[in-house]
Length: 99
Image (cartoon, rainbow, N blue to C red; front, side, top):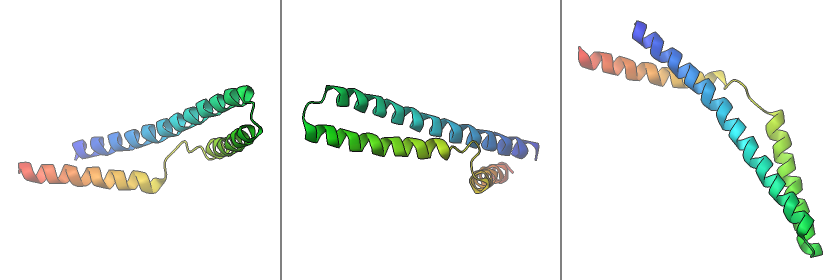
């Protein structure tokens, strides 16, 4: 029983850590893309290309705004429950297999 509680605690911690890390990586990628597009826009001469770059910048800026506004510091409780249930099932399966 103690091992099962330990496994569940590790699963919850892992779920929290992965949820925060994934969102941070996604925001960093969007910021890099936005910087690259701004550099391309400064060097662009063709009006059509300038318009296309500006629309791409607007779309990425909107995504970045939504991503920063919707930053989830904690995953949904159902995610933790699902992960914990799966880990508990694996723990019980292994425990029964030994006995």
